Length: 495
Image (cartoon, rainbow, N blue to C red; front, side, top):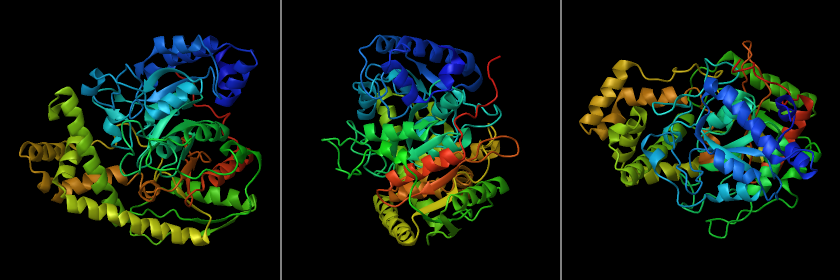
């Protein structure tokens, strides 16, 4: 099979070719590996090659809905037994996983041919994929720009045509942000739908969930059917729709009432391109027969961001401590931003943490009240087009102040400094719309409907009520049919 033929199919389509005997999995793996070798020097999307695993899987036996399709794991929270999960760090690259994550085992059982892991920022802590361990991962649409984070390596690999879909996860937008940056479809399922086991019950109080980045809605729908099977050892037994999720793509949704807003919850300026993206999406929805009007949930966005970061910082502090315990690494072996946020997390009292997490319920109730009137909330996924590489790096003076405070072990002082608050806002200001779905445990998706004047993708986000994954997929399939995106390709790389 030639690359141009391979690129023309989504994962479901490739699996159908394998099932019919029209192509062998080894052929697909060869095309995917050749494409990786051609483009990865430019985009830096692969953190770990697992060629021997891929070759063994491609030899069969083959069964499952994605039998024979090449696939990449995200190198964060997606353990493959016998191989390290680096989590964007240097020290953890030496620690091999004892067992497969639940989602990884389901991908193996589905017949996917895993042959590597993708880059991620350290512990998935920022919305760009740039670390001192792996360097910067670049957007195939423009190498000067980021593919987003934290599933940036997966997004770059799919957008560049290495694989039709790849493993991802989302604790604050980490599926939707890269999808928006690279012209892909990204669905974050609601809390408890996809298991996080076996080593943890849930991540970040259930705010984070695994998933995929894909080029087609049906790939994500079939994947949700696969990943949402109940886990007997998990903390929840989540309700599933009467029909398989994949049937959502078969018919358009009913007439929907959709509220939209392009005002940043943080009160910061939103780029005109992000405004245009929402307005164009709203116009398309109206042409499809839906009712669309300006509206937003009544939530204090700045307070919600603070409460999100309080929990996030505490979680990061715990992950850093565990990594140090496993590896014996010094704190200075990790990125400065990781260390600063973790220090802030350690400085919070248990009471502060529980108060912040308790207020998540307030935002959940407010969003539910919004959904009493509107089926879905439409916003930009990003507040601006994909950032340039290095754009979020703190100024040297700020880094020096933070390094000094860390040396003095002044964690409480860090949380009170304008410098730390500026660091938080620098990271959240470009992506202020995505955390609400994580705080509230609601499903949300980014749909690739817009291109900037410079040709960069810029997705739009829909947030649904509890249990609305089927509705979101149904709407996404309607939008995909009305304004197809799968045929769009970035400029050729690696020539």
